[in-house]
Image 1 (cartoon, rainbow, N blue to C red):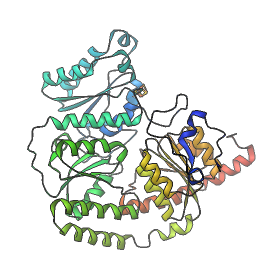
Image 2: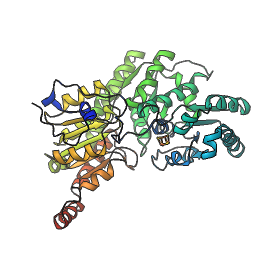
Image 3: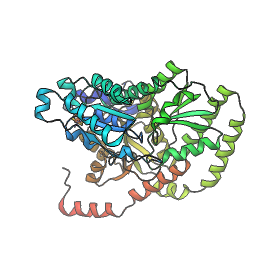
Image 4: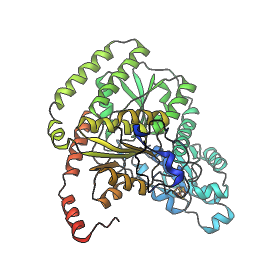
Length: 464
Ligand code: SF4
């Protein structure tokens, strides 16, 4: 029997939302374009591409389009760097009405000329935005000409905002990275203990934590894609024996292409939560052992896990006691992360009452549904009205999401945990699991919610 309170849904959205096992015969619709008029929480194609490429620290990023598109800069997603700070700048061709009528290629050429003259770059990415797709500027030809003229790499990123959804942007970014790597003629010799790490963007220095984990296992992180990566580092990506994929939503296509083109296998892992961290470390060790036959990695990994468990022993007990029976709502970019978050909340004694993602795939939603309670609402590519409705309907105590979900939670007087762009503390690995519990506790128990409740009693609920 259907128990989904679906009064706010557009008819066209009903296939994207299920009440888990109470609608067990219904498959969730996902991995497709957004419903027109539904005001999706998803980012556009260009934003999807930018989020993947921007962390390359010594690259210059030219946004070919109106100045508004260029507002998506490092300041919105502050990946950390151990070297160049170039990527913190943003460049735009600032297309105006006249350019839209007569074409924007001249402005793009002028922008590249100027950057070369001022900064002497080795690598430039040129992003096509909506208007460029409409007027039909040939950015491929411009990039090729400018690359030949200056003997540098100028990579076009086909990311017109309207041309699909955020996943298409991920694919465009992966295409740009492949373009970069494919042409490199450096030696291809594979080094047995070198791995690439795909899909960490070094928020709060997370890639450095994970690099230390790998080193403790006896591995060397050859190329990071793309958190704290450099042009030089990307060029040697073919030397690795294994690709470790963290953000499956953005990096599966790239990993698959690496396997097809350079014979480098990949595994998907997640370092969110203690259980998934341990599972991922063991999975990496097993896979590397299968590749190079060296048993040492298994022993080193087990030793490292035991050391870390000893280090954090008892650290979560206080939070488990305080958070048990609280309700969590999750709305994140990819389905793989949502899976880890459900497990993390469960470990803290909390129930996930609503869970969704922008770009989850059918197989990920299967796992999400198998981990969730029978009455958990599962939704793909949600809009703000749906998120607010189900958070209220299911009594969520906290929402986990990104920058666009934060105001929705605050407006409802619900606690919030940023698992995306703006956070300043790591949430991955053993250390991150403790930060996650701490932040969940701090946000849910903040005295501000009492003030909001009192205020609502005084003036009435402002949310209808
Ligand atoms: S590319 Fe299009 S959808 Fe994306 S920010 Fe620019 S105008 Fe908006």
